[in-house]
Image (cartoon, rainbow, N blue to C red; front, side, top):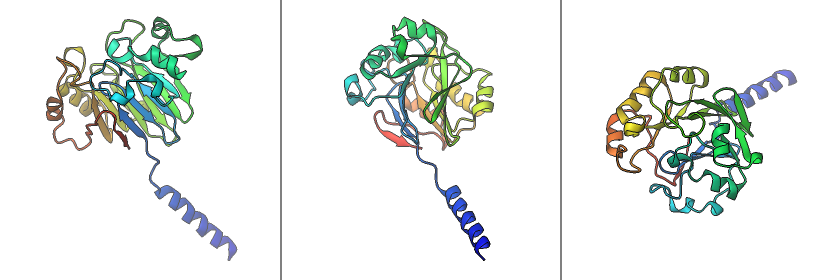
Amino acid sequence: MRLPLMILSLVSTLGCAASRPPVPIQVTWLGHAGFEVVSPNGTRLLIDPWLKENPKAPPAWKDPGRLARPTAILVTHAHGDHAADVPELAQATGARVVGTGEHLRAMKIPEAQQHIVNVGGPTHFADVTVYAVPAMHSSEGGRPLGYVLRFADGRSIYHTGDTWLFGDMALIEELYHPDIVLLEAGGARWGLDPKTAALAVQKYFHPKIIVPMHFGTFPELSEEPEVRAAFEGDARVRFLTPGQAVTF
């Protein structure tokens, strides 16, 4: 009788483990294109943390000396509304800075903190695997990037960076199947406008969650009502409040 009981116990244990919900991923929007992402195991990553002159950034985030130390800072490209604060944040936190070599050298990031990537293979930060992917934009140093963050349980987040929609988005979906897309959605003449952002998701992606970003920060960018109208009826869309941590 012992063997059947052991098998029954094992099946029951495995069934309970399989039914447990995944440990949450924490995402905090910092306004514009900036995010803090904290993995289920506590790995803390900053993406495009433009804070000091960002009118939408939470006041508590504007003092680099008071921020929790990130494991790494990911920067998509060299425009000031994405990268202006990265050198100071790197100095204040000692974190590794991820980007193209040309951009990191132009920012004078200390060599020991440079984590040079380009479009291609994975790089690892504890339980998070980071993939640099293409973005269709301009940049003052190096090429523009997006990032896919894949977590140990298989879930993934895609930060589009500044971009227009492009055919290789189909490959990003095929390779990484992002569950959450942090989507430029109000780029006006500099990137994805709301309707084109909505088209990019409809055409190329199948996420569970869509988080619009890069809207309403300064004149000419689309405002929130226009972004909401473009995604009306899509229950996957989550509008975040800068500074408020949410879990997925």
